Amino acid sequence: MMKDTGTGNYLPLEAIMDPGAYVLDHLQTTEVSLGRHVACCIFHKENAPSLSISLHKSAFHCFGCRANGTLDQLAAEIARIKYSGEPR
Image (cartoon, rainbow, N blue to C red; front, top):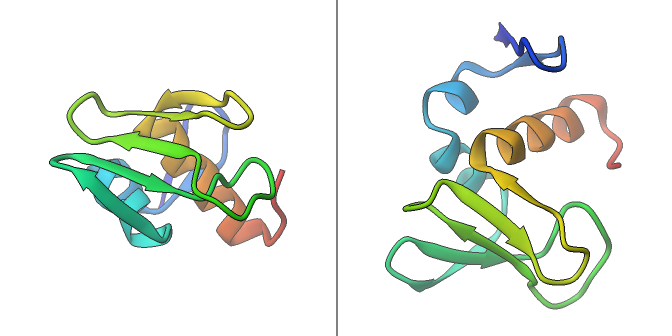
């Protein structure tokens, strides 16, 4: 694990080296086109996928709660939830 300088939390090395692969490994995603995936959002409860993940743009956007950012940020949030045991 390495320390995330933005939050002061420790992140798994795989989340830092390849955040896209880390995100896809930890979310149940469906590929809708080359490099674009959808999943259920980790920031709110839902039954239908509204989180769009773009590997080419290294970005994510939720059409339900409007959360968005880089895959680095999403990987850090997934790691925080995974290791703390509680979602936001």
